[in-house]
Amino acid sequence: KIFKGAGAPCAQGTMRDSRTAKIGGRNDSDSESESNDNDGGYEAMECEWPNVGLDEDIFGLSICSLTRDFWLLSVKKGDPVNRYSRVLTSFTLLFGCLAIQIFLLSQVKRFVSAKAVHDVRIAYDRFEHVMYDGHTTVFAETPTLERRGIGGELGQFFNKTRFHDLTDEEQASACRIPLSQPLFFWVVLFVWSLVCMREIRVTKELFQGLITNTQTCDSMQNALEDEDGIEGGAFVIARLTVGMKIALTFLVILPRFGITAYLLWLGCRWLLATNNFADLILNSVALEFILCLKDVLYLAMVPRRSQLDLADTTIKPPTPKEPESLAAFTGTVVWGLLAAAWVTCYMGFKGFGMHVNGMQQVLREYQWDVHNVCTQWVLERYAV
Image (cartoon, rainbow, N blue to C red; front, top):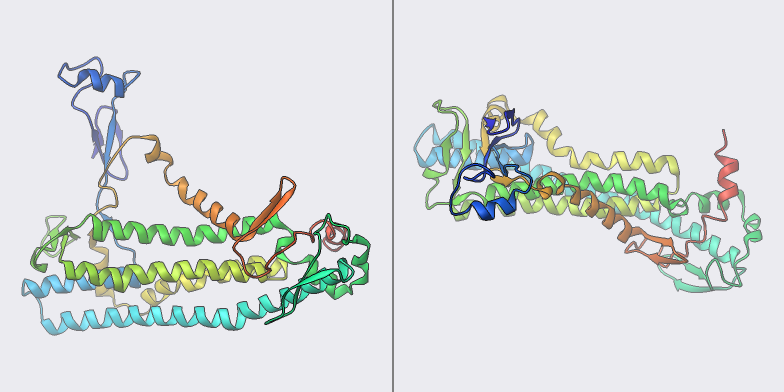
């Protein structure tokens, strides 16, 4: 697999010429249009990507088992009892993984996130009441009292000197609100969002390679193709029946996407309510263990034979052929921009003489009035 015309190897796939004509070379009917496309005398190149291996986790195992075993059943190879047993085992692990993830998400929201949100709302309510000398409006009374100062930080009622009327504990609770250090908190949320965006990107590419780019057939007998020419070796999932595509979409792809999207929201909510800078970092790391559960169960409970079959099963690449372009080299940066946009829209921002509240519902109608007041407090408490 070489990069024809350039003499350089392509590590990830087969690179080949995407044009039959070259500037200053062959003359054909398309030479004029191709000359316009190849300004400077360079050949336009195209990358043909190889097949992609399935992720070695519970989701990849379920895809491998469902396609391989039903293909073997359709061509009448192997003991049907073994085939059905592996399908049953694989999907028992899949449903168990999903059940544990959903249960943990519900309990984190109930016992961890909810308590943190409750405490940070009380801390900010007390700060607003004291700093505005009681000149507040009641924004909400349930489940906790939430008051907001009238006029904001630049209004006539805001009094910085009232900060010393707060107790030491109240000062600490207010100044450690994550939104009191918006840049630091933005970066933490951005890193956490990238973790989830990676999972969403993998899920999207799995859908493209397994559902969109895979041909539809009438029988699972035509589903797999020998990839390496060795009998019993590696196979590529080349075709799937409509029923199989629907099953994989609703049993594997959509649950994976849904859990990741919910965890992204729940993680941002919990982090925004984390009223301690050190815990902010620890919590962002701890959240990932829910995503890693699929890998833990796979390594701990999947037999060696199934792991070998998974390693020998591939799918079509998300983009089979990709012409050389600016988008091909920089397009994936969009995922980082998407993460940045999500963080900004979620937490809001302050700047240009105004503040915009985001979609977050932890500190609703946040006034962005803590940072400046707490500057001296932070310098004193975090000095080394």
